[in-house]
Image (cartoon, rainbow, N blue to C red; front, top):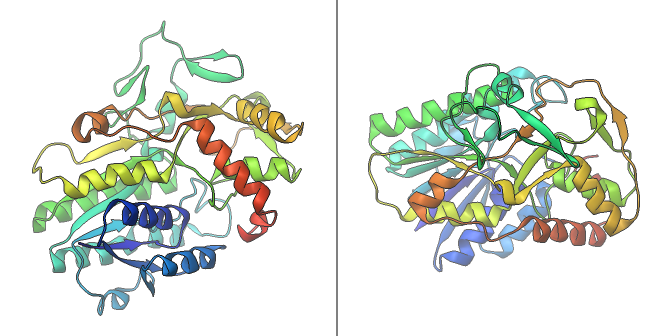
Length: 355
């Protein structure tokens, strides 16, 4: 089998390539990346040693796909992954659209031409911000948690948020491009008869992730804490009680491997894939973990709200477990420990990440 991975030199793309090669002897991988992200060169060297055929290409350019050999599957991991993209930072709103949506037509046309299956890595941030902020929450210790004594809206349970949760705008410019990309990918698959899977991922995290405040928050927080960089609790009374779940890419690779093997036609094609309640953590709890590991370093408190921030977002991956027998193998403590060990071993990682 041959797989084409777009965004192959990013943290997720490179981690998936490595994990899939471990699971599938004889697998051939073509990796595409435009290398615009800080730190991408470090992953290019690692992937070459693993035997990945790397192509310097941009998904926005149709001509970059013309001479690629045929693949059996495409995994689309090329995107701007920040929820603030298009409204803050160097990427303009037009560039966000080009990267996350307009450029999608080229790998989809490639899949159409070669009769390849297609896996789109989407995001939990397709969920409605208004609906997320309206969830009944209570404070327990250092974190927000669902208030089980009050009614919950459709698509959410004590296990977290599933596919049936509202995607009504606003979802952020970033979330809007990912939601539109889901629809386009599904329509291509239906129109041209090739399989499409969509995985709405929670926060992907692990050692070697490029840590920045707006993406890779677990990695950024641990690296910045160790280096005594300034940290801030933003919004929600400056308390750090906002909660997200963490998913290791090797666990995502297990789900994708099952989807590659699945011959099922029809049924659901969209799945939520996150760490769930077992792998959930608030910023305040993460700080306490870092304090115990590296010594005390207190974040500043900034109670002013920030656009697109939400207080609680944990994914329920029960449907993926039911349909593919998927389960997490990397608990939160192990994941955080791996990031911490990497931070100790790479004192310049924040600079490599572009900070």
